[in-house]
Image 1 (cartoon, rainbow, N blue to C red):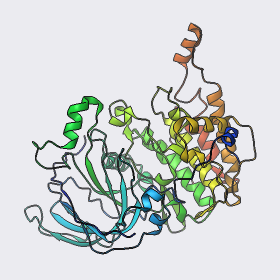
Image 2 (image 1 turned 30 degrees about the vertical axis):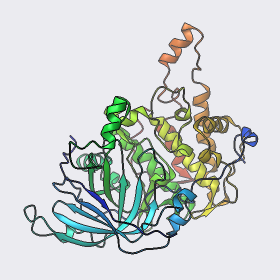
Image 3 (image 1 turned 180 degrees about the vertical axis):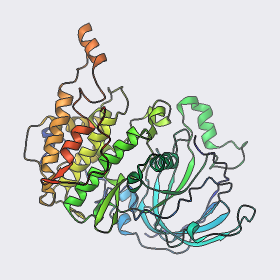
Image 4 (image 1 turned 180 degrees about the horizontal axis):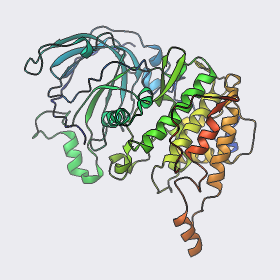
Length: 475
């Protein structure tokens, strides 16, 4: 059962000061556009270690305010972002005050990881923060704060967003997965999951008066069920590390292999489908000389039992460059399947190995840049052509040459599945029945976890570390 959040949530903002090739051959016939992402994908959290105690908030009180304590130049993440992002004022130095379970904490922004520049969608802003003040202010709830409960000295991420109110909360999904791992002798999985420190929502973020005629209420009244209500959400998470901090191609391979395994475990055990694999959502943490891949950002994820109920079931979820071919096709009507996330992992490896000459260096040529810029139907066509191509010389950068075998084998697996599927329109009853009975979940048994495991368990002829060996049943 999801926890019952009954906290009071307010947002105040003070006046701010601001400073100011291998691509589809059809691509050659289309006008080139400017790439819209920076070298880190412009999207999400950077990160640190696991560990520490969970202080996930099911609070009675939550107060949130925003003040600027100093001005600052753009951070490197901001400076390399798209122009629309860079035009926004820097938030570095701003402070956010939270009262969670009777403890007031002041968080200061040290780096802007990503900022939304759109009017439509979740409007997600991801900030690296440090806790600079904390004190007990509601003594009816507690009188002391133990060192274990302190946020000071921790490496934290503050994520602010406006998700659909009916969508299962990211914190609920993550906490459920972590609890399942602890209860079912799968503690290995904890190393590969993010940890939520606190998370709260406010449906009435426009005002606390239930009788107030807010914009959301007016939109709901006018559009009815077509309009989906959104909540203001603040989530504090432990910081992890981005892919750019990895030290070798083999470390990249281990992280990707870890993601394959934890993604499968989530699907089979707590029965969660992630639905938004991207470069920015694959993180890691390091223990000694060993790296552990972490699957991050569950904003668009769902329990499998709620796949038809969550609000995002009405939308095609994912990040365009990494979305499966089916999900970019407007005629696809069978929802988001497990194999679509496997295909996304393939595209992530394609982009990393072909668009980067090292962990922090973007290649001089970007053969798949149109996957980031074009509309869905054109990206869909590009990916279809790429999958069916029998061209064996992929534009893999020398540093990532070990991924060539992975890419060739996985592309062959995907295309064998796509090529053998029933094609619409079904011109006879026999063809229609064949389509109804076809195994769309695995494209006829071709796109499966065991098949991906066979490809990814070796890198440059040497075995990678297998964390979990119980995920090879069914698809």
